[in-house]
Image 1: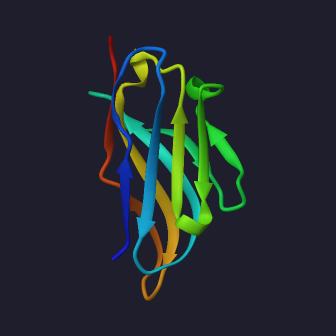
Image 2: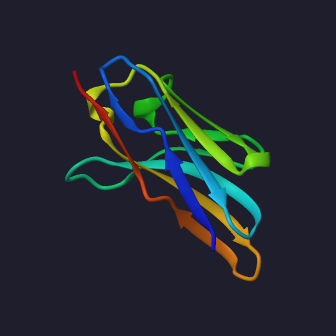
Length: 120
């Protein structure tokens, strides 16, 4: 079974920082793109940032210059460093990975989500 496990969410004051982590585990052959999405209350899930296996990144405009996505391919882990957090960043953050699993082929896997709350 392939799964993604996120960690690092919590409560932070506006202007503060948090670092999210997401580790993939299971019978993984290879991982292509990994990414972070978020869903605020009563809003649709939106893309935050993605990173390819060779390190190319993409960000939604609202987080450019504040968030940084990175990955450790040896650990099958993706990170999201979030700085200068704003109240509008409050959401459940989900990790996603496009990967190939032994015996199962191509899969798009989601984590369970981690809550980030930005509030004073």
